[in-house]
Image (cartoon, rainbow, N blue to C red; front, side):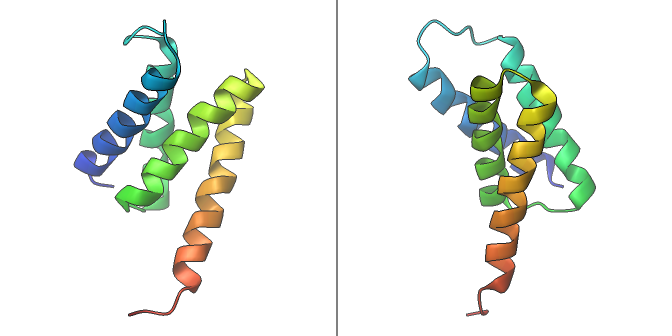
Length: 93
């Protein structure tokens, strides 16, 4: 996985998260959890920036909803898998 794509996906998701959540510190623990989660996606071998963005946003959303890192990871993994499947099922142009 490209570190540039990983960094970009995390930065995108975190900037948007901060816009929606006033009062959250730039150095909040959720930011570091997000970077860990996206870094762990490297095991999939996937480096599609758009897919990583969707996974990053889904992770933060689920972390807020579920208040549990492990469950948020599983939920975001499901979103990532669904997006990957949808992308792979589209005919090539």
